[in-house]
Image 1 (cartoon, rainbow, N blue to C red):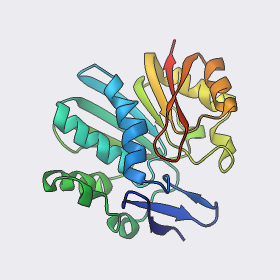
Image 2 (image 1 turned 90 degrees about the horizontal axis):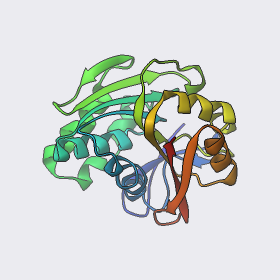
Image 3 (image 1 turned 45 degrees about the horizontal axis):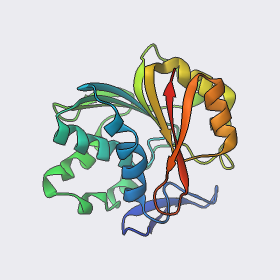
Image 4 (image 1 turned 180 degrees about the vertical axis):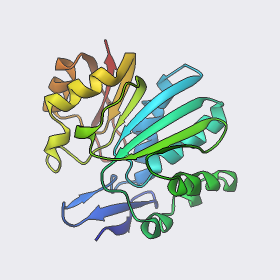
Length: 218
């Protein structure tokens, strides 16, 4: 049974006892997601319209932050999120992320979680969501993505998500110059990304994390 805990910045994360793993950094869930996926990922994409893929929808935090950014910057985003084990609505409803943002954005979190799975849903004029309930290893698409949020559980907990085959698959879904960001900076991950056709760089991580990866499809 997932457990809600409070992280270092006051925001919630989920702890999964069966894996001994948290969905986010215990040093701060929101600050981690903002640093990796928004600051190092989304804000490096200059186009007015983006196609984003998230591997690991989890609590919906990354989607929520992206929807806020889309509204502020008036950037049109189609957001596809892959999740094999969606959280139940009662658990998602207890998460406190809305408390950290102006009230005018609260509805975004609720709409993201109430959106039906396996169906494209319009959340705002700038943010369209497609939540897909499946295993990334089985996901097939003809879409090409400008930005990948790779947010699976860690390589030691979910090794099947961090293989050469997965990153070759992700590479095939990327547009030219597409960006992938992930919290893992393991040497094996860097090598797999390079082998799949990415130019890989290490960037400073959020609190509690020395480095993260940003990779660009070449």
